[in-house]
Length: 252
Image (cartoon, rainbow, N blue to C red; front, top):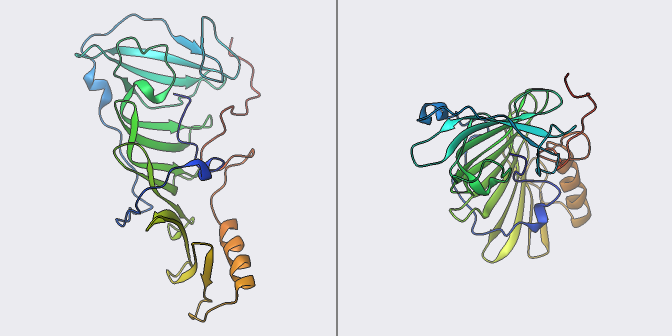
């Protein structure tokens, strides 16, 4: 399951809809359902291989992935689990491929239910619920210590309603959404007090005691608060890039 919600570098490409007011705790980590219990028939299926772009391959590919087929479910779909080829570590927990012909499809289009992704080092990376191939509810990005750092609030069409960014301590520091037809960006200090609001090309900002700041200082304050946001190494933000860095040789 290579293709996920890439949050940082394509953040401006999202179509933001109405702002969601319900706040999800940054510490709320979705728990995997008992997906393996859905297996109705175990199948002796060889592993399937994919290259680093998610294209099917008949043989193992360096920097690619492989998929274990855990069995069939009653409605004709499958339970599978994906792994990194080089590290032999899991890329996902078991997931449901609802499409009967979807085993060789490494996209999200054939996925149903909760998906949890992992980095090659084994740390949890992100999680999203899918309804027949569409992401819904909340998409979360975790740092390597398992803390929620980015929450993408999605509607039933899989479109972003708001993006929320948290500090290491779980404090909401930034939110991006569309409000009254205009993009709005809000920042907060770690104590919860408002710091910056950007809307309709207008910027307002306050220091920690609530005193209004001039425009120039508000820009620097926003840049400083942005510097506190979670950022993955190797040039990505939120989730790993489409081609993850790998240096280990294929296992013999």
